[in-house]
Length: 272
Image (cartoon, rainbow, N blue to C red; front, side):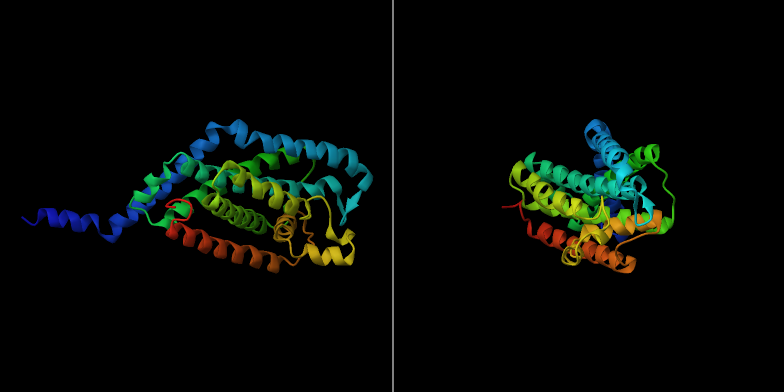
């Protein structure tokens, strides 16, 4: 007579709930991976082609006249910046398009009624953005090796910088998708915020070339710290203090996760 009650208790046990959370998280990741691979010509190839063009134009044609940058050949100097730029744009773009697509297609409700806590949903989409960031970053790294040599100065710094950066911008894409009401609002931040910050983030130059006022202003750009931390992992040169750079990335990741979860719990953009 107590068998149904026993089964209910078993289903509500911490082990069963943990298994359900893991299944939900894994399902989101698998779906995101399938989406990335299914449209690989849109998700992976464009960044590889764009980076190749940057290497040809900036590296070969202009770089030969620039010479050394911080004691490093120019083409080699810009390679980590181009890799990080692709990671930033693709991590952000993957999450903002995927989650907004779920809202637009009205299948986000399936996630909201599923027995999953909101933090699992956020982590699932961020994991998808991280996955795409790493895949595209790997593709751009392979393209970079065709044009220049990349030494590895600190493996851990490279890995930590790319993962933290991808997480930060995946969370940024998630927050953008929560508030976006149309496709124009999805494209607004990448066009008017991310692109300027990236180009002024030390991808193509050392801020030591800037006048003092511009150099101090550049330190307020978080992408400058991310790019330079990543570059330090390869080349051992940086315009910023590495400890400060990682502190900024870690704090930004924690704060943005809290913001994304807060608005998720409120149902912002989904229950309005």
